Length: 330
Image (spheres, rainbow, N blue to C red):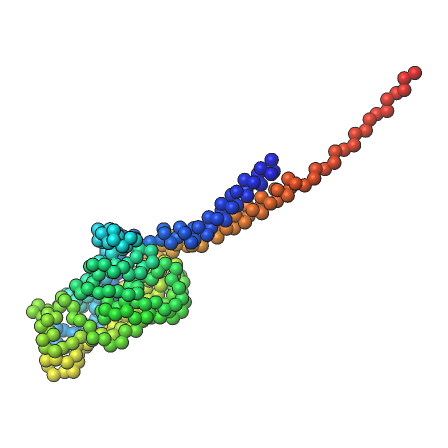
């Protein structure tokens, strides 16, 4: 009976031990992915910012500039691309909508970001664009890969339409979450005017005829939860200038925007809570369950060997039987 039990335990031990690496190295890369229908929005603010009044072409200090960013999963487009790409694809239709202190539009820039649902690597397909201009992204944007590493990554800058390194700067604790801090600097770069301008009658084409150009620089900062690869917080020290041309009335340059852009407090709280819940799911597949099954397998193996050893132990000798002396018959 002990030997039968030991064989059953041995079978379970082998099963648990084999399941441990399968969960981590086979199941996780296939199960962890960004859903195609995901929707998220974010509000960022730059307080005490500098903003250009296109009506007077004068820069002025304002109390606040708000940036509303939305990312909406386009399921129909992703399914269409998957047919030819041969892998799980996510299509995010994004919009960055900038509002001045009076609530009126300053600019709006749409973009379409196409990427691999599992690795977050860009997928090049028709429709990939920024503000209507076709682009070919290299590197990541918006989200880091699952199980982010302590290293530099290539990050796509939508304003400049260029890819540049974003540097790992260290590990920090952000509101109870251990995060990796990354920073990217884009030097002064000539960039296109937005297709939608804040004043009627002013278009990128009409501005181009004046010889005035738009320049941009930023220091981009992200605090990324490494298991999910999701940023829990972000900032930008952002500056834009108009340079040269007749539009500036003889001035060499004028500040179009300057401000320290930060996530609004309520969105910080909701993002941290969401990332914490998603982190548990990732850790189940990469750590908790694999290590749990490995420990359980080792425990079952030890118990199986113990029972097997008990079954092979020699039995105790039988007690010697003593007989009462029989009387001698006469």
